[in-house]
Image (cartoon, rainbow over all chains, first blue to last red; front, side):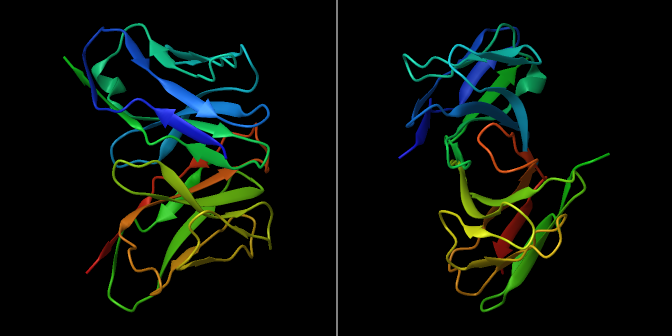
Length: 111
Length: 114
């Protein structure tokens, strides 16, 4: 079945450092891929998405490229801020329409 | 502002008690969802509804029940049959049921056992 695997956290970075959070997936067909962010005590917010191979999603300085050859959708940001501290979830939606989530990666950014 | 409202923010359940979590959306979305989130884990789908008056079991439906009598409302009941109900519950909606539709989430209800 479909599944999503994210790198384990927590990831701790200094402000202005480069961020990569790895995400790989297993799916049949051509899933849509998403990154969601969850701030403490809140629900999830859509950060970016990509619906086909080689698409690049981007938002708020974050970006991720849908790589079908490596079944990956890694999240990157060139310069993180303290306000980026949150839990990040990678997710896929297959032909059933259901969202399958990774386990989440906690990012802590220190000033 | 359009969005999803979950209430209450915190809820406590006694042994043998059923409790109902509220979820209301004013986004005019057809599809709605309930997820359970446990520490260090991703979200797991409890129930979903593609359209009003219809709902389907998700991956962990045992001990839960839902109704979808109105388009904007999708309440979740945690019954006494759910033996480990302590978790963070998230409601979501999307324009319709489809792989390309992003889901919009409420701020969640945290349920604990007294």
